Image (tube, rainbow, N blue to C red; front, side, top):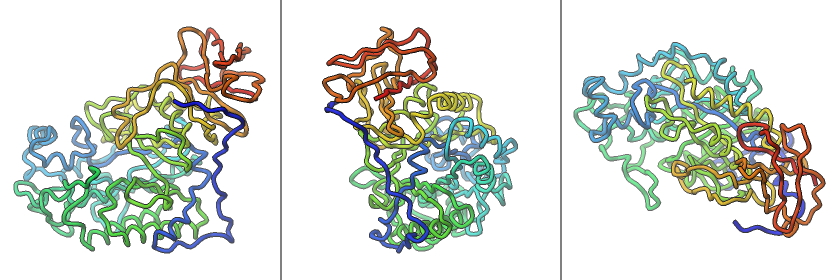
Length: 497
């Protein structure tokens, strides 16, 4: 990467939150919605956790199981073959028949919240409704919900209480724009065809290929577009979540652009005015190109910014590289990869929303718990370089270039021992080494005499009690590493100017 002559610090501070007298009123148009300001709590928080857990967790198939409700009706897909072998033909045992099996016998909202808190998360919450149309709250507009069916629990309410009790901000994610065309209601030989209708889980009959249309950039769209009935229910569901649970962060999956501009604008204005009325510092995230830049906070799915982005941003990634919800072949990223990803994202002015995939019974598998606790242990030691931090002039140095674009992280293999990331906090510079060189020396080229025109007074290694030896040349700040590592991953050096 290109290096520059550096001096001082970049604070990247956000605009102050409006005072009570300055509270804005939002109209349902893009110009008014650009009054949105991302609150400082979000930029301070850096790390959050959410969950993909619902009816789609029940089949326990292999692969990307949150898509099971769609894939089981797609004849060529492995989920379809699995379904026929284990559960029967899809017109005899359809997706709706999994709902009574979703009993959530081991779900405990307090245990989940304790784990998320131990992991160091500052915000957390559930997927309120995924693409399958099953709401995880007690809904008046959707009879297909977890309070009235399946576990008979208002999961959104239970987690709101538990998470806020532990002083974390509350998140609800909504994916329900995908429901339009999700099920093959126009395809004979399925229960979707036989039971499609306005009150059905599956919705009205549509052409079997309605959801498969893509635009010039490869994003899924639909043909025909949703009618007013679908849009009305979509909007009503959002309003139920906003009114009933007042999430601090409302997260939207992509594909919302299939909805009318007026519906999208009304939704945002409603959410923003609700927050303003309650003096709530509210965050709404979206994926491009669903809303104009400036009307909310940008979220990237399994991807990250290549450089420092001027506004706070979010990436959502899963603890597993191969699925969002529970599957029998679920594999987890290593603890090291998860921590390195967090550091890289934070160095570029971003926050990480990490997904976990609970078992159908509501328990969180041990392998996932272990990784969350490892992140919490690391943050407990090194959190001063992460929480409330801001980017430096450059995000870092090293040979590894992260991939960009939708889902790009699935093709990214991680960092090397030469990669270093920078953050600042309260005038303090932190250099975070993503590896521990076998040579015993860590050169930081960005802090060489030729590139950084400030005097360095001392260097400290967080978690190490002794002095750190270092020299500074025209080529690099060269740090002699101690014999013992202070932690297992991502080593934080405090550079005292």
